[in-house]
Length: 516
Image 1 (cartoon, rainbow, N blue to C red):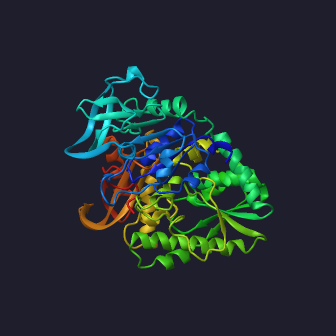
Image 2: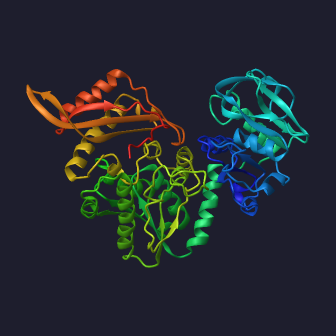
Image 3: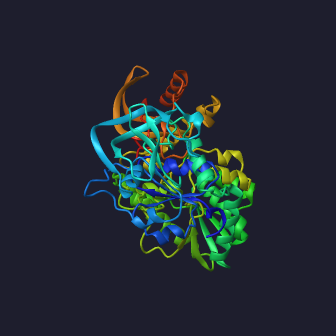
């Protein structure tokens, strides 16, 4: 394997909630990282020509009968390996050490005392803060291994093999609570694994353009555009790769934000010179969604109909055998497609788990390996305007997953108007760019209100705003009370059908960013 993937790191996922954070931290250091199932064959790993392997944490205990399996050949190859939490326990057990539950876990902050000087733990990290989350611990260090750090609670915090090619931590260097975690990962990547620092937007674009040209040839490619940054970046990459053979289509399913369709068309056609067409398919979508309330069913209906609509449009062009879409790495991860048995499906993304089996297109997904912030960086490299790049994420199913319960034209209109007011005020107040994602949710609850001395019985609206880096984890945004008051008053006074507004203060996890 060549290009930006060569000389990177493979992460074997044992079901940790932090696995994606490991990948993100490594990519921030311009090193390619890829998450693979814990029981993947060794040959499938070596295809990537990695410089190192990382074993993630996980909820299981290595001594349990049903502990996640792994290919023991992987631990015997001549490559640096870093084990984190459960990964430490695997390395300890595999090399003849002991792992037990002491009945007392270690959760939260701890300090480490460095007991041996290594390239992994610099001496200045002695006494630094780390994040622990474990019930089991190493009670016997393997022969030819040594403890290189202890926690303030007397637990083996880190250990290393004699040749220092095998390292393991009980703590989690990938989380922000470990104050020098990024430095530790950097030491592993460049001092121990000798990784290549070639994961850059320019290298990514160059490789994707070449791959697309080789795959597509003289065929036309249909690009599914939703109005968000992901599909816009896909359109720009395809335009760069194959020019006029790239045909972008925005399917208006009736579930876009107010003025979304026209704004997107103007930005891509006039700003970037992309061949883009608008197709109004809203009546078909509303008909298919009539009476449907289950969120998974809504996603699948929307995903399926998107494909059928694209297939209908494609009949106007010759040699239209490919469909390009803006699937991201988190979409794949949350849909359970890229992982083994340790992963759970969080929700089916319409462009991953909702695709019909009889689809005639071959899929092209240039962004499938990228997190959201990486997409923005690539978009900037491609010359997309800031207005597109900085736009908050918008789901493919659109307002269909922001209207809880049944979708009707009336409810869509109410939400469009309320959401527009919300976003406009955030921009006026200079808060929009501080927020990762903000949107309104129409909740299937009616409440009693008083407006103009008259009793009302109207809809409840939820407001959501979160901060995040990659969308895999998120915290609710601390909205200034005066801004919340302004938003609420404006919506209630301007949008007929809403008489009460709430603000969501749930982080991810335990919630998701979107409500459905």
